[in-house]
Image (cartoon, rainbow, N blue to C red; front, side):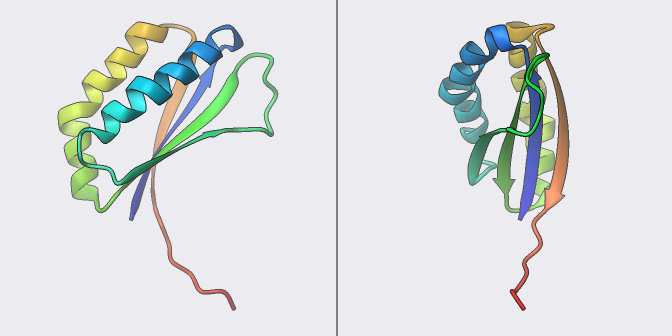
Length: 105
């Protein structure tokens, strides 16, 4: 399983609006591409929030082919929608991870 992680630090004054928009529009739009099985939306608790509140959104897909298809056909417009709406009020970075199965010893 491939995890596509987007970490976003958003200014406190727009965090509530941003969180609502992510839950009601952006994350559903990403899932509507049909390339991800689920999304997980988390707020980081261990960081100073004075200059921003940090969130992590993880999307699960079956394989790299699906992720590349998402990046080629959908990511640019969805990221533009986010940037157009929240302009200079956030910073974001993306990472790709592969889930590793393990058995407890």
